[in-house]
Length: 152
Image (cartoon, rainbow, N blue to C red; front, side, top):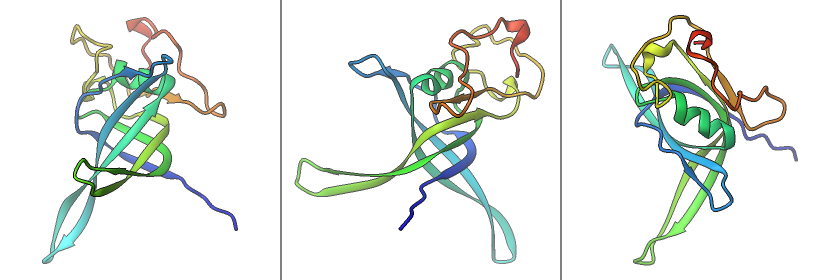
């Protein structure tokens, strides 16, 4: 029997990106993503927030830490991963996380630049940058373009 594990989420970061490295030097970060869903309750439309924990690896994690900050709008494509662990008191815990394999920044730089824009200057435009760990997608450049040529 065939199986398929794919998820696409569009939302806003719930916290700033904190990059860390494995002992082998691989970049990794865990981000929180809030995704709003519009639902009707008592004849009134309300936004209902859903929160997802996402792990990014490699160049995708590096790009996220350079350009994203709390509130940044982003599209994440990846797969679901079920994790289990034991607490100190012996109880078992579990959680479904997203392993992000492709990331696309949405909106302009005014949506909140990360550490890559410490001066606070804003670039205009509505382009976006794509980062991915998959060879089927174009890899983000290892060095960011000059401020005049930033595609967003």
